Length: 112
Image (cartoon, rainbow, N blue to C red):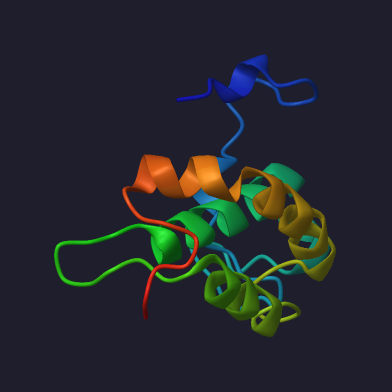
């Protein structure tokens, strides 16, 4: 786990993880923040958390393939996710997919 206080520009005591369920269109929670009012780190964590949840195997379902997870992130841009952060995340996810899927116990081409 990363200590957020060690990230440049992120001060200790900021409620950044608190806001990772805020949606870019203002429909999220807990504060109903919208757009740039959502801290950047929270917008980043939101996408990483969603991607991880989609690709990880659960006891009740198999993880999604990488391409499907990316499709869903793009589809939810402008409503749930910051579209600029999604577009920045995609090449990183492409580069890191094999390691992420190995850690998640599945493969990038896992069946739906």
